[in-house]
Length: 316
Image (cartoon, rainbow, N blue to C red; front, side, top):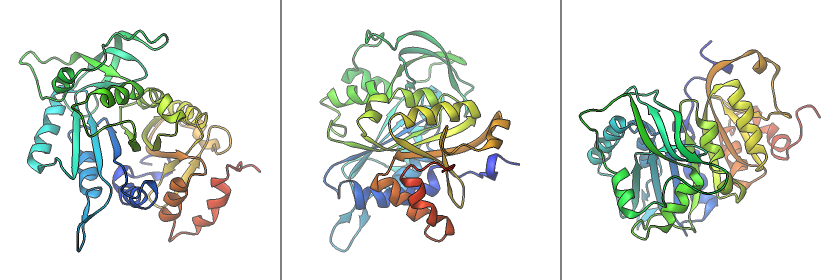
């Protein structure tokens, strides 16, 4: 089997058209900018999807759609430079759309991490060099515009090694920093985060935990993350449940509800390693309801909508 439930490769690409419709129809009707975070951008596969699907459509009189900013984050210097080449080749940029690129790590700790960099997909944060998660005394200063420009620039040294030290932020700290840099006009405190997509090679749980304030304030509409380990799925969904986020495993034909207590499946306890993606949204929200209805519009699974959306246990 290729993975639990024979998942296939369902991740952002098949969900993007639905999320675009939700953004335009429900979120703000074009009244404010939406943010889309692409954590673990690699060389730009999901960035290509984001910029292709979420751009304003050309109507008879004017462009239709919501203004957005994509923030693509990749810790590997070499792969980040590949992302930069893609952006240059595609010509993405203002005024209708904008993509920010940041060569940093993301976790639940602010500081410097050692990054194991094979030079292709599969790099990961391995050790904390300095950092603090408890008392607010961060080892990184508040991001300045000069630092922003530095981490937004391709720079691979000749002595590039497979172990590098990278500045690492939490989602809470990164968003707060970007909002305070006056020169970064495409991110401000009124912006909603339509999507936090995470593909951090097993580090997804910690990236999501670093967004605890954004999640508590329901500023993030959807969270999309990769599943590699069963324990990670259990811990991540349990954490998101504390902030009232309902999660689903993405199957090519349906969204399978997953919950550490109410929607857990016996065979999951027999699997240590498998691959899939999960999408989560605020329990009972119009956005999550619309996603579920659109995804199952041609399926009998649509009848499960009310049972799942009202939080009723699968055992009731």
